[in-house]
Length: 354
Ligand code: F0G
Image (cartoon, rainbow, N blue to C red; front, side):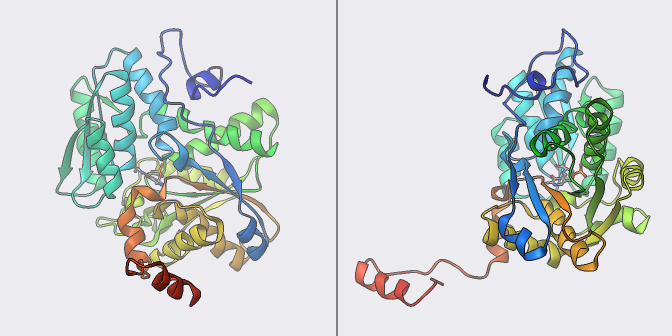
């Protein structure tokens, strides 16, 4: 089998590419679908995770960004711009660097995970911190992109959705069909929109089934659940700290058409799932990602998701992006030992360190 060359090579017939679209690639996509052996047994369901944190910049954004930046380049744009809670900016910066475009990013001051900021600056983006939140930043960059010759690469850019839908194709290919339930975090609501589009397209072209789409917002940023704009969203899951999702109506449509739902999970539930996933399965995903696991746990307990269901949870970003939350969440710190094997042996014979 030929080696993986990224989404624009793998899905050229299922994406809106032309002969002029540059075959931009950082070998994104083709991410592992991993069965959760321990939690499946414990919770009574067949659970898989789609580990999008294994993409080149550590999040699902690379799927959409490779499309959006390739199209910007094709259309002769010299610069891209985005608002971001961190992952979009990291991805935009990487693909812009690769394509030789200028990249301007606007992030909420003091509210993005350290790893994401490190990525944007390393990839050479021009980084602006707005004294406001993501929703304010998005409003400004949308307006600027309409006035200037700068391409907006937030998920309101339709090419982002096109790229991101490919994850649904990969899930169906890996399982041989769609799962019963797709559980996914919801922030700006582009990704749930993209997955639903992907599942519907595969349903039409390949006859695969349609899953129930179950989206999860964070309690302090649950605009769709509460059916109102949240002016000051707050959550430990900074990636989904969004009070006025741009793809609001298409997310509601995905939930309704698929017989699914959009609900919220609390920060405690997110952090609990975050630790469970790492400790029971050896998978470290960032807090926002774990809204999908927290939501699944809650709905298996309430009976909203039937026991025995085949469920795929989307783990949207890598845990290493946000080391501070990990360190703050886990109270056990490394045990300091003297420089002596004997003393060390004494310590570990006593049981688990710490
Ligand atoms: N999970 C992670 C890790 C994210 O970074 C995001 C969004 C989401 C989930 C939600 O996806 O917005 O499509 O509903 N991050 C954006 C950003 C907003 O700027 O990086 P969504």
